[in-house]
Amino acid sequence: MSSTSTPSSSEQRLQQASDWWSTSIIDIRPGVINTRGIPIQELIGKVSFPQMIWLMLRGDLPSEEQARLLEASLVAAVDHGPQAPSIAIARMSVTCGLPLNGAMASAINVLDDVHGGAGEQCLGLYQSILQLLPAGDHAVTDSDLERAADQGLDAFIAEHGKIIPGFGHRFHPIDPRVAPLLGMVNEAARQGHVKGTYASIARAVERALHRRTGKALPMNIDGVTAAVYGELGFAPALARGIFILSRSVGILAHAWEQSQQGHRIKGPMPTSIPYRYTGPSEHSVGTHHVEKAGS
Image (tube, rainbow, N blue to C red):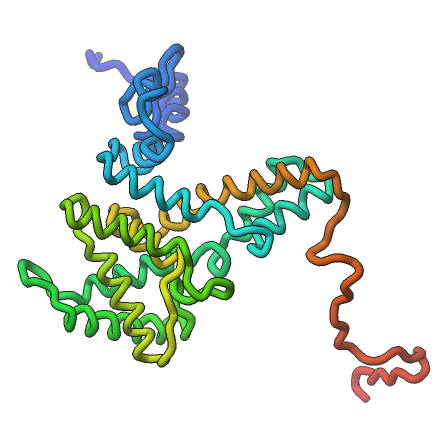
């Protein structure tokens, strides 16, 4: 008889259950909550929420400057008023009777490729341009940046169409959130905390769009936060995820405010303002010709 015992069926089932979910993020046991190996009691009161986000996503704690850049990007994108569809949806949902969690879920669900995904798409564009820059120890010149930006834009437009995410804004001639964030990246690069490459790429794209269109298409919040997240080493998909974290605060604030105002069933515009009807004029059934199948 072998000295090595064979696991019983109950032990195998227990192992299967334990292996069903596998995570390196958190270790939960009776009396123990360790996040990335750090006891929660050592994190509470000692790390900021942006630092905790970094720890959860990246597995370690950021430097002070990295945390400052992440926090600034979270603050910058937190809200853009009821003109933003996600905010309007949160408020309308509350007037239809949804609680805060339902209103937030409804709003977050529209933060997809068109409304909410521009930061992810823009960071993907920046990364494609980065791959076109000279590798190695070669110092990147302005002409290198311009050539790579043009090639990257050509490839992006060929695949996705002429709308370039991260540039231009339907409301702001100049997005007031861009300059402070770019200034912080520039200062962090000057001090050696980040390389500044993504910020340079973002400005090169801005210049390339101006050359191509003959008009200004300034960087917007998605373009500048994409540069920040690129400098910080986040994947494009996480650029969208972090934006959603930020905008969720605005969604919550608007949903809560609307719940305190007490309105019921508010649509996208006042009932006193009619929508435009583009169908046929009023007529009786007898005057409406319907072709039968096969006639």
